[in-house]
Image 1 (spheres, helix red, strand yellow):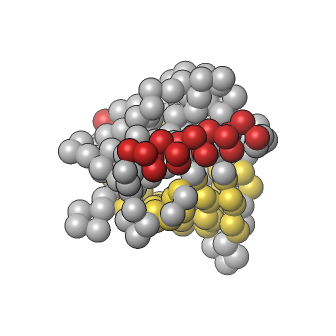
Image 2 (image 1 turned 90 degrees about the vertical axis):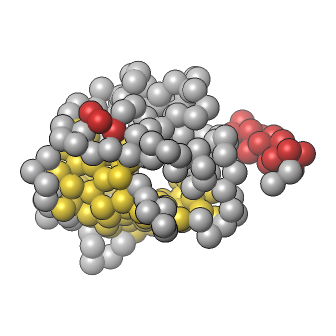
Image 3 (image 1 turned 120 degrees about the vertical axis):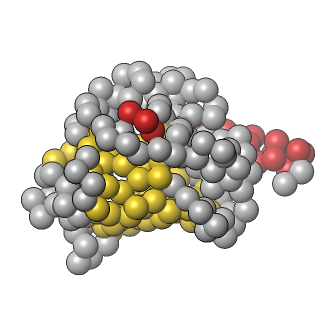
Length: 201
């Protein structure tokens, strides 16, 4: 993408951001594995590295005991990224769900670093200077421990910034994100983590 076209794209996205308002105070409640629900989350900010449609990455998540708890797939589209999630063996309740800046998942998963934040924003959908590109809506896991859904994120791009030398990771927290408190929404311990890898990873 040329610098001129990228500037136009950023201006268009910024205009959408001024026009649209999204209520993300409540957790995202989505269906189980038998019937995947679809959530279109149009959160309009631009990240820093352009990626083309067709670019992809995926993560296999594990809990602190090394047990598999699901997968996350990122698929770049023309105007953002589809985030396709299948989870299992997770505790019931509302959990924060983020993309982190480092592709390393050693329990208790502090090795994944902070949130993916190439724009140097503050944390949280309720922050005037936020959110991080890696901020995602809360998820609600039912009693079965299983959850499957898809969301669309206009801020996130599957490009060189995300899949740089130290990589990136998907992290699930013990508690809910309050959408405001730096640096991670007072979401508590990290209970699951998966390293994001591109097709060649």
